Image (cartoon, rainbow, N blue to C red; front, side, top):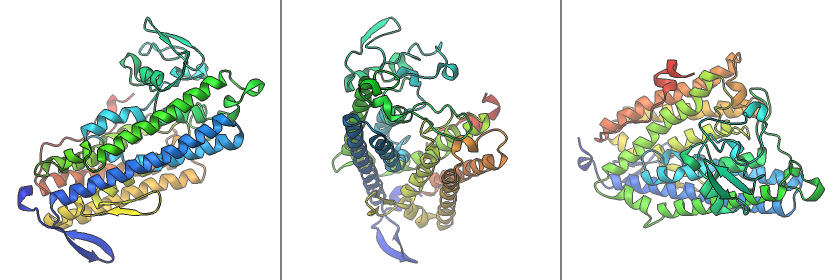
Length: 422
């Protein structure tokens, strides 16, 4: 049955104290979807502004305290942002923008000093592999001279993915993360990056040279993050392009965007590239928040974001809740058993993600969990992967249940062709 035949006015009902909406219209569901997007990006903006303030305080008065506060602000900023990643893959406006704020992995030698014994001194694929903009006021990359005497937002934007090399990440969360934590040189042993606050100190207290330029880079990266999040938040506000796009027409394109985002993040991106790949290789370099050892939280909040969108309910950073008619209600009106099944599987993946968080709280982080020989830790990560793969099978069934088609989820060799991974 096509979407047009199951549209209707949403009727609010109560089931065991949980709000549900009987046979909502597609536009009702899509309005909730857009409302949650706006709230999630607005929360990301709010927390990024707090990060920016913490960066300003660090630069103005470098100390162990201001440095620690900036790192804490970065960790807090990841919580709402990761819950928005489910809006990727199905929304072109998000995909075209996302690389500016969350691209990974990055060749950190583009930005600052690195331990070349582990990192290396050059890369055939990347002429800017060890360009070190912080140490060099003039750069020569692929025969082009770049004036880096002033480090500002414009320079960072010019350097971002320079030479069309995706790992030349000069902006966004992970560039800031590297500038706050530095390289994680511990392999699969305990410990995150160990950058000292004195990398931002003045005068003789400065370590690793160029503290003023390092501060300028950090400040510019923080400013860009805020401006980029301001832009995407506006796109999901009333009248914004992203909101208008998902609400246009008969609702089928918008519902397609929801299901595509859920399935692609669940399977190829989170289940495959971010989790299973690192487990197959036992490689700590395949870790999303690798400098800070925050990957457990990153993965957990990605999984939670998928559940948020399906259930039509998001808890904001201030504790308030945004909720409304959801894809779950639309599916339940057509196939109650499928809705119950998927709700259960989403809960299972969130709990599996929480298990990684619990292990990290006990001192065993993602890079240790995936280490070769850590059978127990590997099993915890594999359980998360299995839950994501399993829920994707149910997400696929939504396509037929609500009458949409033409959807292909992102894949990953780590799941589809493990023998090709090396």
